[in-house]
Amino acid sequence: MSAKFIPFTPDPVKGQAILNFTRTLRYYGDDKVKDRLRRGMPRYEMELKEQVGADAKTDNLVIRGECLSACAYLKDKGVKVDLVYIDPPFASGADYAKKVYLRRNPLKGKSGKVEEGEQIDDDRLAAFEEKMYGDVWEKEKYLNWMYENLCAIKSVMRDNASIYVHLDWHVGHYVKVLLDEIFGEDGFVNEVVWHYYNKMAPRSECFPRSSDRILVYAKGDKYIFHTQYEKREHVKKMLVRKFVDGKAINARDADGNVIYQESAERRVDDVWRIPMLQPADKEEPVDYATQKPEALLERIISASSDAGMIVADFFGGSGTAAAVAAKLGRRFIHADVGLNSVQTTRDRLCAIDGVSFKCLDVQDGVQLYRNPVQTMDKIKSLIPGLRNEDALDSFWEGAIHDSKLGMIPVYVPNLMDSTSRVLDAPLMFRILHEAMPDLPSGTKKVIVYYIEIDQEEVNKIIKEDDTSLIKVELRDLKSVLGDVVVNDTVEYSIGDNKDDLINKYLITIEKFDSDRVRGKIAEFNERCFLNQKPGKKFKEIKVSEAGLEMIESISVDCTRKTGAWHSDTEILIDKFGLVRLNGIKTNKYWNGTIACSKKPLRLRLRNICGDETMIGMEMRTI
Image (cartoon, rainbow, N blue to C red; front, side, top):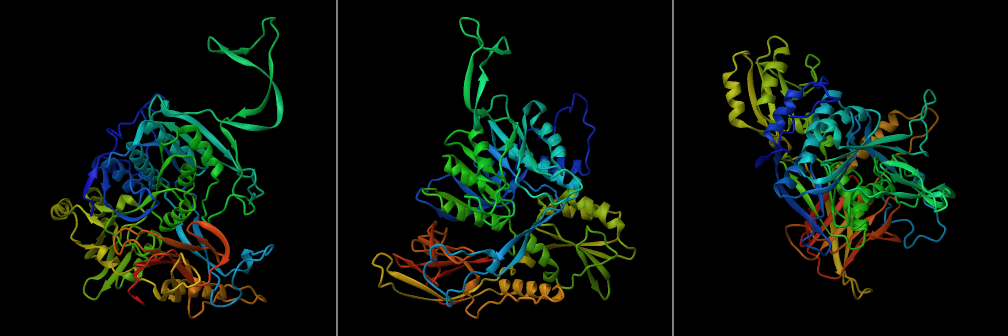
C-alpha cells in the first residue's frame, strides 16, 4: 500500500494554448488523467536490495519500478535531475522477447580455456524465447499514460534541465503535442533525426524506414547545452563567417580579402548519422531487444550535462544511459519496471571499473511472478475457476461460474498499467457506470480485484449507487499473488581451495533445478514439435539431471548474513559458457565452482530466465 501521494509539478494540467488558440485536440480519458494528476504520484517504500562498489554514500541508483513510482520517491527525497533521456514504448504493436540460452554443461565436454582462434557461434547454442513485454496500446490510453509520466518527470527536473524523448513514427507526432503542453512551445529545443543507415529494410513497398525521432525540450529559459563537433571524412576549405548585428557575413582581412580556413570537423546538426548495433561491432551487445548504441547517448549526455551532474532514464531498458553516464563522469538514475532490465543494467555497470551504485526495489505490495507480463499471463490459472467468457468485453478478465449466481464477471487490474494500480473513486465510478451497465442481463454479482484501494471512498460510492442491483465483491489481488514465486533448488558443497592461497574457500554447485525454466523449455519443445516443417527433424532442447546449464550468474556474500546484498565475489556466465569474474571478461569456461577469500555467508544464483534464489550458506538445499 502506498504510504502517501506526492504532488506533481504545480498546475500540471493547466497547459497552454497550442498554436495560439484553445486546444482542440482531446483524447479519451482526459478527465481521468486530470483526476490522477490532482491526486499525485503514489509514493511507495523502497527496499535496498544491493550495494555495489566501495562508496556506501553513492547516490547512483538502479531502481526496479515504474516511472511514476521512481519520480515520487525522488521528489519525496528532494532529488533533482539535470538531464533526462527516455526511450519509452513506441506503441509499435510488437511483442518483445528475450532469447534465452542454455549455458554449457560444466560437468561434461571440454573444459579449461578457449583456444586461440576458436570460433563459437549462436547456431551451436540451445535457445528459446521468453516474452518480456508487449508494446501493444490503444492510442488514447498510451497518450494518457505518457502525459502522466511526462508530468511526473518534469516534477524532478532542475530548472535548467533538458529532456530527450526518443520515439519513432508511430506516436512521435502525438507526443510532441503533449510535450508542447507540459513544457511549453518555447521549451522546444530540437527534433533530432537519428539516421541509422545500416538497418535492413523489411519491405519493398515503401522507402526504407531508417530513422527515429528524438524530441528535445528544456524545462526553463536557461538550459545546459554544449555544441558538439564531429570529424569530417576529408579536410575541407571553408569561408570564415562572423556575426554582425545578428547577421552572418564573410570575414575579411585588412585588405578586404575573404578569409578561408581548413576544417577537419563539422558542427553536429539535428540529423545524427549513427549506426545501429551490429553483431560485429566493438561495442558488446547485451542481448536486450531495444539496446541503443553508446555513441547515441554519448552525444546526448555530452551536449546537455556537465561532469558530476545526474542523468536519469526512467524507461532504462538495457542501461545504455546509465553506463555512458558513468563512463563520462556523471551520476545516474536508472529505473525500469522489468526485472531483466534491472539485471542487465546491474551486470553492465559492474563491468565498469570503480562504479558504485545502489539497487532499489519499489515495495508496491505486489509480489510479481517474474515481471508484469509473466504475472498477467498466469493470472487466469491463479484465480480458481476463472475462464474466458465470450459474452464479456475486454474490460473484464473473464468470469467464474456459480451454481446459484450463474456467471460472475471478474475485473483484474493490469499490472503493466499504473493507472489501474489504485482502486479509487474514478475507477470505481467507471466500473459502476460504464462497465457494469453493459453486462448481460441476469448478472447478479461481479468480483473486483485490486492492488491498492481507497477503501473509504470506494465503499461510499458502492453504498450510494442506486443504478444497479448487481452486487460488488472486492478482493485483494495480493492474496492471489502471494505464493506465485517459487525458489529454485540448489545443492552445493564447500571445501578448501588448496591450489589458491588467496581464495581459500571453494563452493561447488552440484545440482540446480528450476521448475519454471524446465516448464518454459517443455512449452518451447512442444510448440516447435507441432510446428515443425515437413522433412525437417525437430531437435529437442534437453537439460541434464544436474541442471547446471540453467545457471546464468552466481554471487557470494562474505560480508552480511541478512539485509542488502553485498557481492564479495561473483561470476556471470555468458551464453557461450565463458566466465566474467567480478566484472572482468575471461576466456575460461565455467567449471561448476566459485571461489572466495573469506568465509561465505550467503549464496545467490540467477537462472537463465532471470529468477534469483538466495540462501544462507549453512543450508545445503532449499
